[in-house]
Image (cartoon, rainbow over all chains, first blue to last red; front, side, top):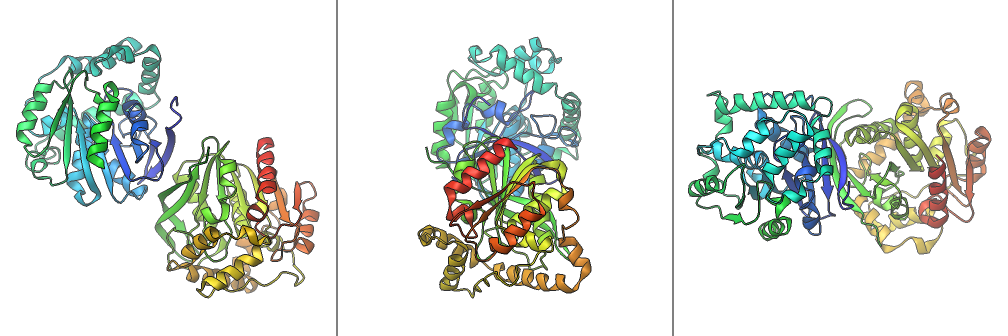
Length: 284
Length: 291
């Protein structure tokens, strides 16, 4: 890893061999849930913001089940993002993190929010970043965006990976050849492509099956969550456009929304300092 | 730059004790550095823990390795379930710990009873170890069938008071200036946690059981197996160790394993890593560089 403050580690979380990226010393625990998309992982999602949180907090960014990072890609993901929430529960328990501040980006924001709804006693603060998944689970209509098209057309090549990455960030100059190389290699690890397919099927089942959807929807629960929550959204997000954020804001009147200029879908990658300042203020 | 010693926790999913299995052992460990993994196994005695056992070695090792100083089951801040303990219980806990953190191929250092635990792990899992450095270990000498000829000074019994802990520490560390308030505080805190004395009493019982029960004895015994081991290991022994005396225990171990590097540290007591940290660190580092 380029940044010396980041550590690459593994833990057996429940029965899932889970890889995670760690930073910081003996401070209170912060857990970060990365978004979906090919080649995503804790490190890919949060490498730029983790060092900024590490002075005050012990920061953990686990790689999700479903073919992300170096976590076991063969673990079944029949319930898509709910499978990730179940894994997060096992991870937090395995590391004995009794009280945490929890954050998530995109799909990971849903995972974080769902964990907080299931285990409100374990979460002190919640921080959510640009999430179509939450919008969908709140009943906000979500059109097919440019970013989503890029994500869906990913075919395992470096060229299509570049399209995916450019759709996620505002500052295209961060999408270097080296980053493309790393993410594309991660997306093509043994087991990862099949895990992604299985995850998508699981996610479709979770969101569409009328009975399973009860686990996915948060329309009735999230607005009543009493854990202090903050939402951040990129003003230049082409994957989850800020208009959707503003719709969501109406449904969550108690949650402060911050729309961050010059930021795409991965706000923490485009504006790490601005987002870290918001997070530190909220978590401290 | 001072090394950050992180306090971490992890649940080891299961540990087989003598007669039952404990499911979910909340395990504390001290963590520092980056690089290939080194696991440190502390000794027995009241209040022993990863940090109190290895505080003088961790910063040096952490310059080159990723160091994990585990608090063994029943010790430090790790869970202390009320079960019947054996040394194999500790070996199983170390095995579960290494497995849970997916450490792969490790180097190990053990002191005293912990040196026995470390080398027993090596014998049980040779495919997962690079090398092991063992410091002053009467427990291993006895598992090789050796006798101390009554020359080992009896260890003062911990009765729950700070004074009894201090007299225990004075027997295993010869240089009084090394018995800092910090070290005593940290050991006394761990020694006072519920379940710790019960664990030690259970191990005392186990020592007696082994003498009369050949079935338990064969679990502990390494007389036949250790000579077959070809992985690199070495021994470090305090010349002035009173509880595992160099004469005869160290010398007899050296005679049994003439090809295994055997380092005598002059003036050192039982806890060489705390009594003569510079020399002990130098020996361990150069052994690991070569192995």
